[in-house]
Amino acid sequence: MADIIKLLPDAVANQIAAGEVIQRPASVVKELLENAVDAGGDYIQLIVKDAGRTLIQVIDNGKGMSFNDARLCFERHATSKLRAADELYHITTKGFRGEALASIASIAHVELKTKQPDETMGTLVQIEGAEVKKHEYCTTQDGTSISVKNLFFNVPARRNFLKSDNVEMTHVEEEFFRVALIHYDLSFTLFHNGKQIYQLPAANFKQRIIGIFGNGFRDKLYPVEQETDIMDVHGFIAKPENAKKKKSEQYMFINHRYVRHPLLNYAVEQAYAQLIPQGYRPAYFIYIDINPECVDINVSPTKVEVKLQDDKLLFGFILAAVKKSLGKMSLSPQIDFDVDPIFEQMPQKPADRPIVLPTIEHNPNYNPFDTVPQYRGQTQRDSKPYQWNERLNPDSWNAFLEGLKTEHIAHQEPEQLEATLMVETPSSISIEADVPNDFPYFVVDNRYLFLQLNNRSMVMDIVSARERILFDRNMKALRDTPIRVQQSLFPVTVTLTPAQGDLAETLKKELLLLGYDIEKIDMTHFAVNGTPNDEEAEGDLQNIISNMLDDYKSNLFLHRSDNYQNIALCMAKQYRSRYAPLTSRESVTELVRQLFQCDCPTVSPSQQKTVFILEPQFIESLF
Image (tube, rainbow, N blue to C red; front, side, top):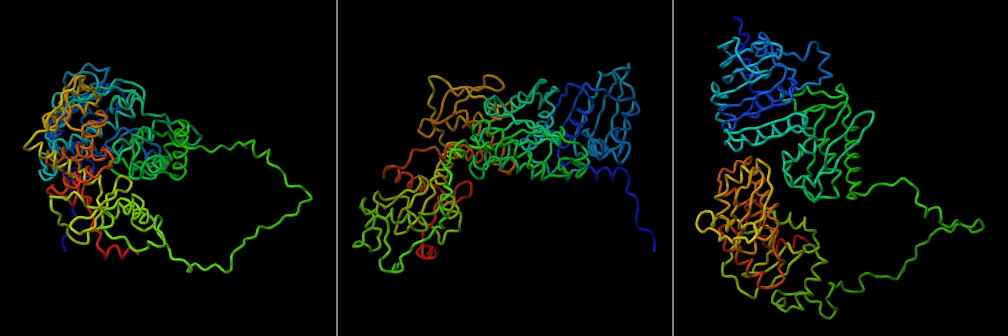
């Protein structure tokens, strides 16, 4: 039988390797930026066109390469970082595998210009799909400039899997942040489609965080400092009130390398456990210095996942360091190991007094069945069940509410009620939009509304209901009837990150349709000249606009391609919890009417139920 095993051609092997290392334009950005850092320069420039599809260029003023090295660096497993296998266990550089440039060159058009400071001429190398087109001397500046054009030009299937430019650029920015954050002693610049997005001069760690995420972080950061014989922990954590539901600003570095390690991330979140609501995530920027021999970064081609020699020990150190920082700011209780003087003043037992064991007395004649259980607020002579028509009387209604609080539904915590609303409704809801004025109701925790309509008992999640109402209103404004703008006598200035500012410029038309008249002052400052002419617009414009832009950007990852739906939902989320308490029948009636006039009143845009029918069978099951 003939032999069937063959060696793969180098070009095919490189394309296979590229599938592991280069997944999207952001992967190229990561590899090129890390190579630029290893080159030893102090200024790095990233130039991107069409979110990296057309061009990714990285320029540094580092040590450059010789004529032969400029060609050899594109060979697979060619590296200047390793000489022996044991060096894998104390790596301090970014790259070491020698796979990145070979993989990139196999799926793109690559041009490399490089020059060493002590040489008079530089080197030019041009490669297309792993085929060398040019290798010659040229005139160029000190350092290295590498351009990657037409990514995936010979792998169309991979190119078709790329997302929109907004999504891909978000990934590119994230890789830029990961490198620029930890190398704050270097200068970084990012250009996209000819526009400067970030210009980050060399600074300290806190200044670099503010330079990337905006001046809003200036007063939010607390330092974390803990030095031990095993490891050093440094960095900053954000105030608990700045926690968000998304993990957008969580950065962990080990030996100046961005890493993802679930246990270490969990350690930080555990330190905040009693300070932030469940489901929210704190912002943090922490870097760890540890012996490289204790870290195995040779786990995956992307070198983001790592293995630690004693991760449980590091977990304890990080947890203690973050708790210490929170404690210093009087945010978290600290353990005081000093003996309180009060314990020294406690009276001592007289030597002549015998020790008497405690006893428990009970009434042997007690019979728990002698009396009928009563609801709070319900007398013995008035023990019949309350009917819905009785609750129209305020006194009867309040007595019923007090009694119900001892039972299952009203005794549930808000989290339990929220879980109940996410259960499948026993039957479909059919409510007329013409809501009567005299339906019975009561409100629990200003979050849940119990009511009866059309002889159906139900509970409404007020926040989810308002999200549905606001979303439908926003969609109508974007498509048909813009919201009237109330011009401000004194415009409010909001501070955004460069990325947020660029997005605000892109969404300026949509924001105006929603009632927000914004005007760019400079790259990071915008004037809000007008807001919607209604009560819903009240609030902190800085947080409202900043959070709306962040949510909009995050939703791009969820493939919400409809621009109007995305911005309508993000703005609705900013206002769904900003409402006056439902203290009058008029406010309750108006909320119910607005909800059931929506196209889809029973489900919020966030896919949570707004109304749950309390069928008799369901109520019976609670008991």
